[in-house]
Structures are given as C-alpha cells and as structure tokens.
Length: 489
Ligand SMILES: NC(=O)C1=CN([C@@H]2O[C@H](COP(=O)(O)OP(=O)(O)OC[C@H]3O[C@@H](n4cnc5c(N)ncnc54)[C@H](OP(=O)(O)O)[C@@H]3O)[C@@H](O)[C@H]2O)C=CC1
Ligand SMILES: O=C1O[C@H](COP(=O)(O)O)[C@@H](O)[C@H](O)[C@H]1O
Image 1 (cartoon, rainbow, N blue to C red):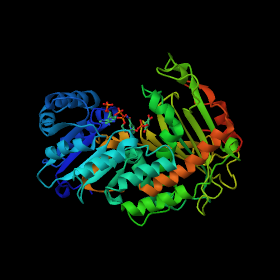
Image 2: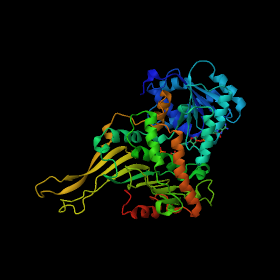
Image 3: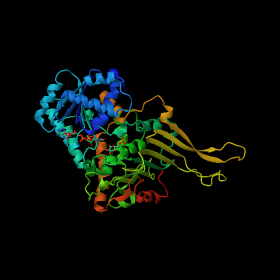
Image 4: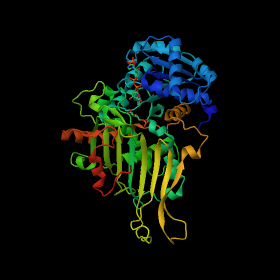
C-alpha cells in the first residue's frame, strides 16, 4: 500500500501555504514523510500565497514552522535536502489571469500535480477555474479539499459542482483528518480482524454506544470563522459522523476506497432524522462561559477576543443518534463534543448488554456489563472491562471488574504515532482514496446535520451555558439519564 517505488514524482502545490493549517500540519507532515523516505525524491513542494515573499523568505518560513511544530529532534541534513525542493509562487487565487505565472513555475516534466486547497472553501471553485484556464489540470492530477465543504447541503453542492467542472471524482481527495488518526483506522482492524467483535457487534449484544470528542482548547484566535460554523458544522457533520459510520458500517468486501465508502454512506443515510418535533428530546446545545482550566481562569466564549456579545453559536453539542437498520435498531449512539472541556479526551465506549441471569449474587448483586473503550486520543489504546474471579482461599467465588488494557504506547514502544496529516498525505501521494470522503457522504451528512440546525433555529433557544473546564451543560446529563444511562467520565 505504501510502496515508494510506485509513487510518481509530484508537484505538491499548497494553496494557502502561509496559513495556519499549512504551518502547523501540512509542512511538518511533508517533512516527516520525506525524513523516512516516503516522498519521491524528485517531488517538489510549491507554496502558493498572495504575499510578496522571496523564495529565501519562504524557505525560512517553512524551516521555522517545521522546527516549531515537529515534536521530535530535527535532522538538519534531511531538513536542508527537503528545503532544497521547496519553492514559492505568489498568486491571488481569485485572479484567473495570474495562474499563468504558476504555469510557468510548473512547466515541463510529467509530474503528477497534487493541488492542496488549504484556503476558505468558498474559493475552491475559483482555484479550480484558474488552474483549468491555465491548462494546469491533467488526467492523473489530484486535488485535496479541506473541510468543512460548505455551510449546509446547498452551499456544499455549489462548491462540489464548481470543483467537479475541472476534476473528476477519482481525482478529488476530501480530507477529514480524523480518518488519518491511527486509532480511528484501528476501528477497521478491531472490528474486522477479530471474530470476537465481528460476531457481537449488533443490537443483540450491544446496549448503547457513547462517542466523546472533548477538547480543552477554546477558539484559538479563530472566532470569526468558528462563530459562523459552531460545533455542529465544525466537528459533528464531519469528524463525529465519520467515526460513527466506521463504527457502525457493515463489513466492506475489501479495503478498497469504494467498498469502505459505500458502507459508510449507508450508515449516514440510515441515521434517523432529528427534527423540530424531537429536537429537545434528542439534542443539547451549549456555549462555554467564564471558568477555570487546570486551575487558571479562562474567558467564556462571549469574552474571547473579537467576540460578538450577541452570539448564540454553540460550542458544545450532545446528541442521541439512532440508526434505522437491522443491525442497530434500538441501539442509541450518544455523541458529545465541545470546546473548553476539562481535558483533550476522545473515546468511544461500547456498552454490551448485561448477562440475562446472575449466578454471582453473593459478591455482585448487579453484575456490570462488559464495556469496550477505544481511546482515540490521547493515551491511545483499547480497553475491555471484563469480570474476573478474585484469586484466594478466603472466598470461593468472589468476582471483580478488571481491565484488559492494550495501551499503544506500551505495546508499540518503538513505534512513533504519526500525525493524521502524515498518513493522509501519504495516501494522496500514493493515489489511494479510501481514507477520503466521497461527495455523496458529505451530502448525506449535511442532510442530517441541516435538519438539526434548522430545528435549533426554529426554537430560538439560546445555547445552554456551561462553565469552561466542565463537561458541558447539565442538560447533557439529563439527555442520557432519561434513558437510565450515564456518560462515562
Ligand atoms: N487550521 C486548522 O486547524 C484547520 C483548518 N481546516 C481548513 O483548512 C483550510 C485552511 O484553514 P486555515 O489554514 O486555518 O486558514 P488560514 O486563514 O490561516 O489560511 C488560509 C490561507 O488562504 C489564503 N487566501 C485566502 N484567500 C486568498 C486569495 N484570494 N488569494 C490568495 N490567498 C488567499 C490566506 O491568505 P492571507 O493570509 O493573505 O489572507 C491564508 O493564508 C480551511 O478550509 C479550514 O476550514 C480544517 C481543519 C483544521
Ligand atoms: O477540524 C477541526 O479539528 C480540531 C480538532 O482536531 P484534533 O485532531 O485536535 O482532535 C478542532 O479543534 C477544530 O476546531 C476543527 O476545525
């Protein structure tokens, strides 16, 4: 799958090369791949932005950010060789005429062009058009589009339609960086390489599922962007639904891109719509107020720099999602995600059904059900809670709940956990679309998300406040408590 011999030399063209994502994630990821020989030596990295910048200044910018954002020690020699292949092109993405300058930079050779759109999604179509006019798109070229694609179903269609005028679906790589996380990929191995789980993964064995994606960060200087989006568009419509679909999909026939994406799509389409009629019963929206994190005061959302005091944008969402199919009928998937929660902590907890009869009443009057915890980040790993006999002569059959804990850092001590963008860049360079989102998936996810957003708008309710550093509004506890269940803290 990652055979460097089969990777053709590429021109990796990053639009928005001096932006936040490029600095923090894309350039460091490319350096890391190059370091271990996973980028073809004849490939070049072409940074494109509208700033007046000399090539020397751009190389200095790339070097500074690699040194800042790569956690491991830098190999100076390898970094120098990487920088030798970095070039800069000034371009205003909306000026179709100016793409001829990019064409001059890329002229000659028969390298595959990888166009990475790390810009506001609203201009993806303009960039496609500029590339087309300058005759810069060939059959084997690829385009990478960052999320969120659009603000709703309609706007995502406009963007996708525009880009599809110039690129075919098999050239389009829609990024959801959660699909590049080792622990998210491990869902495939866990589910389909272990008969124990494959055979017990349905409504007969599973009581309910909890997916928590908690972040301790706030808005990180992105107030304007975030306020337009909110946690529903920023996290649920994409990352949480992608994780949910991998968790709930039917076994794909193989690992090919369309086998996996076909199955994920069926799950998203089978999500029970949440509407104006049941919005209060199925969802909770929250917004963080002033609070404390790790003992230090932090401002509430409305007191962040650049905030509009009237904003009713949600920074927390909890949802009781249901999948209307044979496998999952009657099994709720409780989702919650928020900013300024006590810690960065993302996990999936599968709660299996209880034993129908308890023969261990003397030591356990209420035998707990098995629980499988998949720790997505940090402290990546998988943990299964099982009942075990306590050894010793004093009691004949006392049982206790214990964990079978597979911590990735313990088990794979010498393996570095690669950042999601490294994995995804590698797949792009190798031309494998299986970890990228197909257009129909994006649209099905918008259909479900839009219905919730519409229902919220119809209520005029303000999001419920929660103190920064807490686990969200009290109402999110009630959401699950109504079903006689509780969040795993
Ligand atoms: N940052 C992150 O952590 C994440 C970002 N994303 C997505 O990645 C994409 C990029 O985000 P991010 O890096 O944060 O955004 P930034 O605003 O930091 O970067 C976008 C870049 O695009 C440039 N740009 C915008 N319009 C033009 C134009 N007409 N001509 C030339 N350059 C232009 C901007 O240039 P200038 O500086 O001159 O304005 C800027 O450098 C977005 O789609 C975002 O949703 C997705 C997940 C996480
Ligand atoms: O896409 C996004 O993801 C990050 C969270 O990513 P993670 O890898 O750190 O879990 C989120 O903070 C950001 O708001 C969102 O745009």
